[in-house]
Image (cartoon, rainbow, N blue to C red; front, side):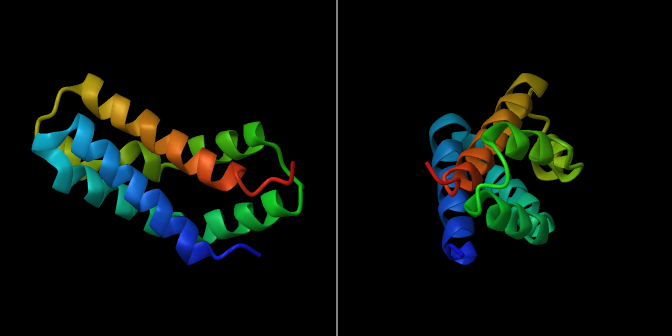
Length: 109
């Protein structure tokens, strides 16, 4: 199986890069929310990564599973800053994209 820690670190780096570019005043909160989401879903992400690597699921399956996670809806640190809902939603969508792409990258071609 792929190195889950490396995959998680890569996703966290992409979350931070997105925050630096798109939420410069809220980088700390965005990266915190991203880290919390990854931590809270790590066991599930590991299972899905293993299934993806075996070719047992499609990218659409991965997206559906990740969207079903309540942790994706929380993003408490960003919401507490009073950041506009549209920006929180954009971050949430990017977080989803980063995680889906990370897990989907393991699906055999």
